[in-house]
Length: 418
Ligand code: AMP
Ligand code: MG
Figure 1 (cartoon, helix red, strand yellow):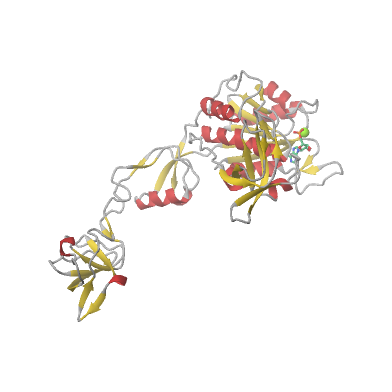
Figure 2 (cartoon, helix red, strand yellow):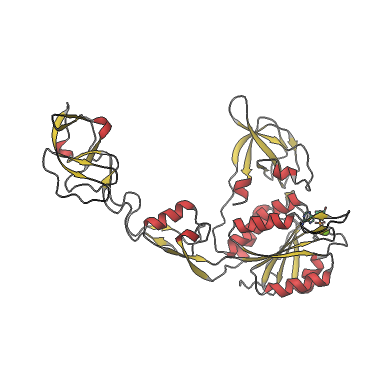
C-alpha cells in the first residue's frame, strides 16, 4: 500500500484551481511498489513497470513492401523501359536462394526478404511480362518499395516507457518483439461506498422516498476502465459510526477509499465526521462547476476521496480528482486531457476564475464544421444530461462568456472515461 502522511492533502488557499488539484495529487500520492508479470493477452490497459527496449530491430530483416520484382538499383532503367530476365522467386517466410545476378530481376512478394545485392522493388502493377522477361519502366528511385531492417524500430530503442498505459497498439509492439509476458504495476485496489438513507441497490425493494443507487455503478465502471480492482462495499446509511468503522476496516487492504454522497455541509452529511474519526480530513474547494467540495483524507495511511452525491458532480470530480489519483498510485504519467476545438452553437455566461464544464451534443453545421449544442437543462442531478450527450465543453477559468460561432474545447465521454 502507499503510505501517506495525515496532512498530505492539506492545502493553503480557500479555492484551488483544477490544475493545482491535479498537481497536488501527482506530487503527494505515492506510487504502489508491487509489480506483476502478465501474459500479453492480459496486458491491455495495464501500466508498464519498466521500459521495454527492442530486443530485435523491426522489421527484423530487410524485406519487400510490395508484390513485384526486385533488382539492384545500379541496374535501374534510365530513360526508357528495359526487359530483364527473371531469375529466382522469394515468398514471404522463405529465404532467397542466391544473391541477385547483375541485370536480372527476382520475383518477390510482400514481406519476403530481399536477396543479397537487391535493394529496389518494382510493384507488379507497374510492369509487364513479355517473352518470359519482365519489362521495367524508367523513373523508379533506388530503394523504392523496400523496408530496411530497423526502419520502424532500431535494435535497443526504448520503444515503451515505464508508466505508460498499454493500448492495443503497444501490445502489438511487445508481441512483435517476441515477448510473451510483460511486467506491469499491480492493479490499484479501490473500495467504493455509497452513502445516503435514500438509496437502495437495484434489485432491492424501493420505498416511496427512495431511489436506486446509480453513482456506485458509474464509479465502479469508471474505475474498471482505469484498470482498478474494485471492492463494492454497497450503501452506508447516513450514520457516522458504522461508516467510520467500515472505512477503518478496509483501509489496510486497499490503495484508495472512495465514497459518493454526504460531503456537503448539511447536518445529515456524515462522511466528513466518519473520516475525521477514522483518520484525517480536509475539504478541497475546487474552482470547478459542476462540483462541490470534494473531501480528501487519509485513513491509516490510505488515501480517501469523498465525491458529491449528485451524479454529474460525481462524474466531473471523478475525472479531475480520482483519475489523477489512480494514475499517481499506479506510477502512470498524468495523461493530460486535450479538448478538441469545436464551434459553439449556444451562448453562455460564466463566472471568471472557475472552470466550467457544459454538457454538449455534437452535430455537423451547415458548412460541415462540427458544432456543440448545449444540453437544455442545468441540474447536476440529471442523469439524462450525461446519457444523452456526447461529452463536455471545457470553458477555462478566464472565459466569462461564450457566443455562438466561437471555438471552444470539447472532451468526449470516451476520452474522459479512459
Ligand atoms: P448528497 O451529496 O449526499 O447531499 O446528495 C446530493 C444528491 O445526490 C441527492 O439528491 C442524493 O439523493 C443524490 N445522490 C446521492 N448519492 C447518490 C447515488 N449513489 N446515486 C444516485 N444519486 C445519489
Ligand atoms: Mg446524502
